Amino acid sequence: MLEAVERKIEQYIADLGDPDARMLYARLPHGKRLRARLILTIAGTSLPAVKTAAIVEMIHAASLLHDDVLDDAYVRRGHPSINAAFDNKTAIMFGDVLYSKGFLELNDIGREVAKVISEAVVRLSLGERNDILLAERFNTDRDAYLNMIDQKTAALIQASAEAAALLSGKDRNIYRTYGRNLGLAFQMIDDLLDITEDAATLGKPAMHDFAEGKTTLPYIYLHEALNEAGRDRLVALHGRPLRPADEQWIRTEMEKHHAIDRSRNEARRLITEAVELMEQAGETSLEAIARSMIERSF
Ligand code: FPP
Ligand code: MG
Image 1: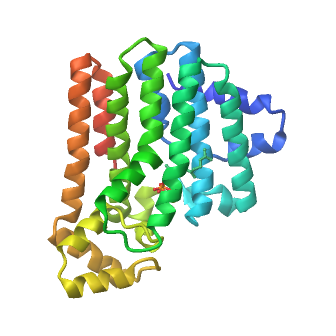
Image 2: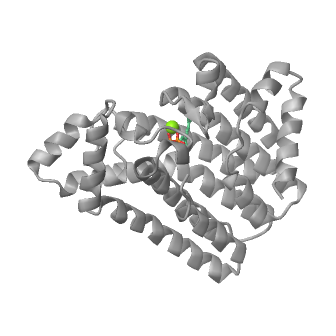
């Protein structure tokens, strides 16, 4: 099913007539293609659905190219990121090529679909900016974190589901909510795995978020649960490389105070709600996609 999307992206890249863009695209690991899977599962494999899926994946890939520059991340999906293998300029400009070509092709799809996707990309950019702003200090505001991941991650997943519903004449509101829940849970789990998994499983360094200044949900819950001395120690570790002993302390305290379990349960609740919506809509394969979100280890 995804093969058609891969071929469509390759065609869009070939259209550019630019050997450098072709070479850089060949170096990008594909990832899970969650957004494309979602679109095709909801809308089927019509040409507009395949095109929309290809466009969304190109925009998503562009956002990750920029994100790795912003996050100083040198490994992506088990491979050196483009900023590591080449440099920041290459990553930024290839990102620009991918998302501007995506937008060019979006003109070819219906007006409403184009609006849904474009609005999501605006929110994605605002979300990334908020992520950076929140990382300037130890953020303890859960709502600020939720709002940021709603923009940074849920917006495009939500838009993928809504656009697919539009393309196939289904109820856009149900699919929009489903996509939003999936997106929020996806980012919550991503943030959890950064703490619970090792670098080999993740395909990127472990416990990188906190060193980058990001206080994701388990850090917010841990901060809430610690006594004053514990809080001081945690805040003092924020935003700089962690020594193995400090990493261990954080993991142990999170375990003791159920910070990980609390966060995972929150993601599970969102997925349960999404699954219930899909049960009502009679979409069994969308249940499986939702469940795979919380059962993954990378
Ligand atoms: C990954 O977050 C980042 C995103 C989901 C969005 C990034 C968005 C931008 C850079 C805005 C610019 C948009 C375009 C279209 C160029 P993360 O760092 O938490 O996840 P990671 O661990 O996979 O890096
Ligand atoms: Mg990142």
